[in-house]
Length: 172
Image (cartoon, rainbow, N blue to C red; front, side, top):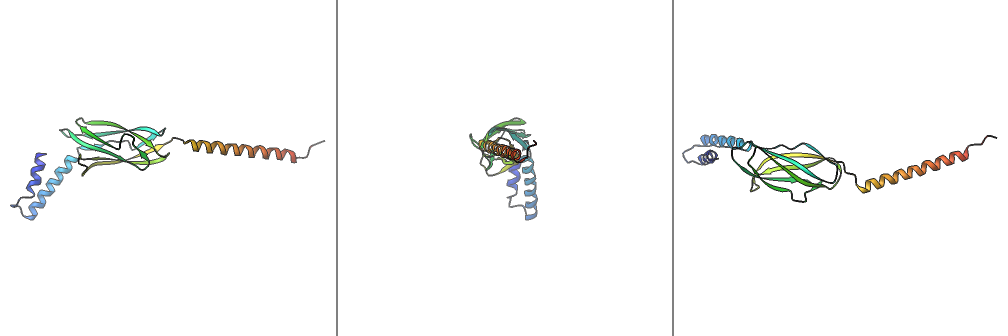
């Protein structure tokens, strides 16, 4: 990090002309991107919920040789997060696992959750992934409508069957 700091300061040197300043800034940008690439998200791309409430497993990978503090943020209009959508994580191992409770507002397929890692001040996004959730939880309204439709179909079938028997001529 000291090297990066020095590289950034060198871009402001008065002794550099514009071309040398641009080269120094490009070198700084490459070094900074290399540091950012040591941190990534390893989320499963699709998760299945079998109830409205479930925990979302998220793994953060870090190959940085020093501890890094990040903010994990989850956002979705299809889910709520009872214990909050943000977590502050200290990445001092190659893999840091966290499970975040989520409540599905609806059932369906491919419900997106945006997972983003930010710097502690929230100004820089380090890594981002979209997690798709397949929610198979059936609502009580859905069950009631299915049962009602089945009863209507059964009553219709019985009435049709009885009418058909009455209209047939009987053999003597």
